[in-house]
Length: 253
Image (cartoon, rainbow, N blue to C red; front, side):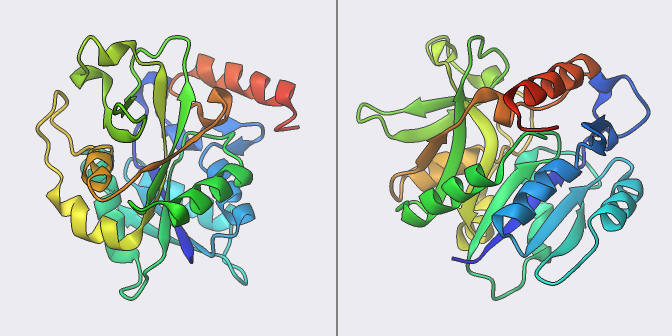
């Protein structure tokens, strides 16, 4: 199954307390945005689409300069002019998919620098074997506050992701959390993303709502990974701490 990648990199990152776009902050000697792109290239993705917004021209110029097109590797760009949620960000990228592309799409975040190629391989394999045509990464959190929760039915099948703001008290007790990394067949993105609404506490279009839609068609595959690998960077303190943990694990030098 051919696989492309969409990388979400449009946010400002106000908690970084900097005028610099979050994905341009250095991590282990390289801007954050380059790390998941390199993982996608190592996995074997031939093309990635980077969704830019805040300081989009700077992000685009940096990516083009540091990861130039080469044989078997190309990068396209899409613009999310108004940040209206992760579902909206992916919709902004869909016009950049080739009209006849019927493979799978990895959806990544630009602020998750320790993501590894082998995890992307596991997600692609799981998507291929999923009746729902979708897979996602999860992790266990000692304190899941703020994270989307993986909701499972009585047969332990993933049937939804509930964002923290919208979760019931019982759902907030769940410690299996959404990592924000997915692999989805392109046909489902084209057909079902337009069905997503913004009837939630944030008033945004959640990509996570796609899980409940696809769960009606079959089993959604879940790949559990180590929390550090899918940890996002939101503050300068988190960036320093995550870089130290990555070095301790030998994932970065």
